[in-house]
Image (tube, rainbow, N blue to C red; front, side, top):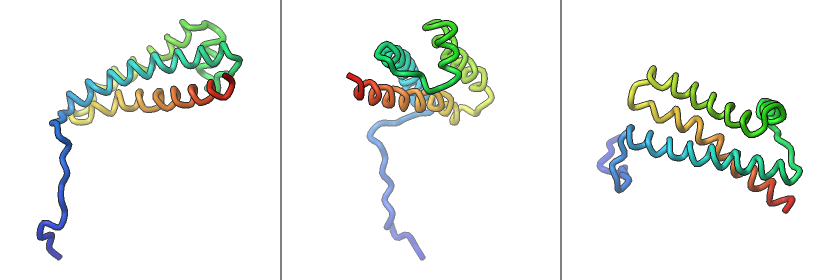
Length: 116
């Protein structure tokens, strides 16, 4: 079999470097972190419960400070692990933080919409 140009390669219209991607993902981390905290506490205020037992314990024991400390710990672990990765793979660190927090924001918004 020969390819004879049968496969086309699509490129996105901008050049994305690993450093640029990582920077964009860190912005998403910041936005998703704030969104998760805001929507979590809005949901708690409306009578919903935190489903993550570790976060629930931190919130029950220390309130907002506990939630911020938990998020700061997660970011700290990510930042501590980042230097051991080759530069091309470093965007995995903020992606690993941003993806679950962004999903949590979506879940929180859905749950809030069920009680409002």
